[in-house]
Length: 320
Length: 320
Image 1 (cartoon, each protein chain N blue to C red):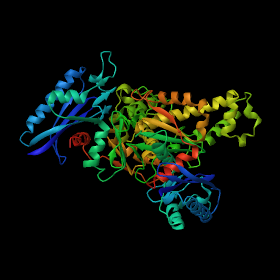
Image 2: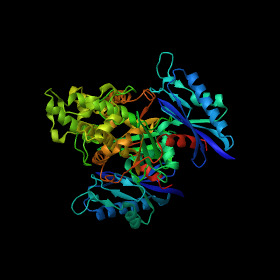
Image 3: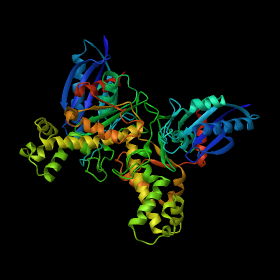
């Protein structure tokens, strides 16, 4: 009988649960919705899913515990704190609240539960099973609906005093810039995420009168995928949107290097599928914002794990 | 007989050398000039000073080694790399060069030499002997001629992949802003250092026509001390210069918190003497740039050690 762990990757839209072996093989995987308004209902769904996964893999081994990666999750006290994008994590007035997820899921399943920030979980996944194996100092940036980060220094995840280290999606990329869900302005996330790229598209379409394939689409429903498709067809405006994104992201990466001086930056998430259109500009902007000791020396790596696998693997690895 | 260590704090203008006991008492201290053009000459001066200090304290104990804090110093290979402000660290064309200081001083004195970034040395000093005792996660910012930083995470100095972590003085505070000695533009150092405050004064005097005590002084020779003196006398323009400085510094500190989530930020260096004129504005700007989880929670501490003592103590502590 093998020792198994359950890894859960909680996102704003859906939650992915997997059973993982100690060697990082995902035996079973289930996706459930995160679009539930009540925490109790969401908790029941998650607990039922866990129990079902335990049952399904009972002939392979014993599940030793649960590891969760989730936005705004805190490893130290097992809470999710003020996550604007999780519907079930709000109070009676509809405002983001403090949710004791680890304790509650542990009571509901009888399993030990560990929890960390979703980007930290993905960084663990890359360090143990992915492209960052053997790299002791790297910064993982997740370019998804939002922008998250997990920072590995001296071989370990950086948690900081209160467990919230690594909120690089909310570093100010453009002073006085776009309003972010977190309440601040100009956050990197409002530019370098799937949401941010769509906002850039709407801005560009308004202030620029050029022809573009994007004008055929409803501006309010534009997605980063639409812009990628247009760029693929040679659309000049779509290409400029990615160049603009690459410049802002690259400049921010340069500033991150000055903090922890990593060997590499690992990029991960949906937006990396469009990297052919922003990679070069991003690397140039990063090096333009680096001093001589670092110029041209920071490796940019792209995740080698399947999208959701990194977070599931990383989250499950907390059980061992 | 006690075990002693020599701590050296190398600055652009002068180098301070002290003999320190294991309990952090400085027994003897000497200041020598750093304004020497040849590295060999500077090395001889330093080696002679060390030998003299060893002789003077021979009845108290045995010197076990030398610890150095210096700008652009690298702990991992004992070098100083491309330090723009050290005259003796340049090549034949007058450009900043790579200097093998630890090896050369070790050969010249017969003592084991360890070297680190000056701000890292000061951070060690504060952690072991100063205001940051018992704090495992803090960021030390040195506000001197330039801006340096030493980052303590999980109780240890953050070095990063190559030993150069913590160059927060060169994080971009104002995109496209002032030209910095390091080659980049808009670095925090060009605003929140003694040099930066003087630059702000020259800019303000030019674009603002109000009366000010500062107009009586030669703009090219203005120092942060002059501006402090004018503010002390109630000069409105001088006060605004510090408010502007506080706003830029505070906003940058907010972004630093998002990286390592420290319990405290420790401020150190000559400019902190003017803190009565920028502290409140800085704290406000920092909190305005923080998300709910951190707002109002980050302690701002000021060094409790005598100016040069922190770096000498911190540098000497590397010997143990």
